[in-house]
Length: 163
Image (cartoon, rainbow, N blue to C red):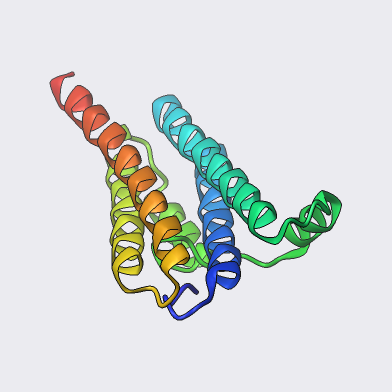
């Protein structure tokens, strides 16, 4: 789990892994949600997390000037990502999801807001406290990406409450 004490490369790897864990959870939620709109929302969020992973992978290769994309793909495929960026284990999120077995959009939306809100708080804290200045820049960018997710979810919540 990301602590802020990592150097830039380790911070990128740790951020990549929590993004992967979050993407895997949102993919799971999309596949298992009962409501079509909840499926769509979780699918969108999973896709965004995948793009975050691509962004981090690009940064990693830029910093290391390592163009061994095959090696990174192997790492990505084999690396265990047990935590979401909210700091919650993926398995716990899946269990929580199963317990609620979302049949309405609002319940799914609240769960997504919780995950992305905690991810925003994590990246915000790390963007201020990370030991490596370059890592702070990366964490700030990740925080801003999470802010965009939260904005999307808030707009969706307003839309749902109007219907």
